[in-house]
Image (cartoon, rainbow over all chains, first blue to last red; front, top):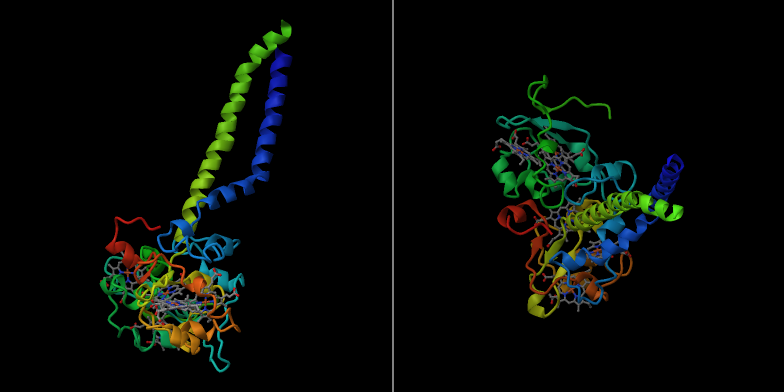
Length: 194
Length: 149
């Protein structure tokens, strides 16, 4: 009895090990199965009858290795850029000026919600000042009349957030400063070491 | 007989193995498929369908993938230097302008990117798809019943 069950256990252990190794080894086999259900075929946008349908790149192929997010494109774009995972061009015309501004603002008209920290640096790494100034934001703190209702309608921050940058359902990414621990002043913050 | 008895007794062991196979293989595989099947669809967030004129001209609507382009260019290249307004369908793009080197044509000129000859790369949408930003918060608020595919 004892020898038999030990033998069975041994066989089971080997089998389990084999199965685990097989799973690890064959993980790639699941990918084609998933791709058979092609994203572009089911997105309601692309026409599978289009002559170049199969040649277009699929996002999951392009994003391999990028830092993963839970929303939007499912890519942490700010991190991907800072870590050098991607090196998007800053200009195609030679005389473009590149201006990065390291200036955080804290906006406090947030009712019961956490205050909003707006980082200029993360934005100017992608965008030009003219994308935000003077429209929709005046270059003076607290003068633009930003309201959440308007943001949800696609104005102010909602021009980009909810369309191309991370979506508006991520309240805490903007409302990130806890009122009970914040001791500073609203508006421009002293420059932090990054 | 001894052997047969052994085989018989070994059966529960086999059952355990089958059970483990299900737990270790089938379920993870299903989970993996579920995850892999659902996540990339959302990754097309911010695709722009441009269909001011295409349907009328018998072309498939144009699809502009932000995710693909922002790997290669910062927003400001298009939205500052090239003057694309932040509005889906708001730039009144047509083929004459593109061939003249405006909008998409600033790059799709055979130098920075492949040229206008590749009609179907841009005109890849389902006929009748209206101008839109795919997966936008506003789109979801307006059509909450429609799953964000």
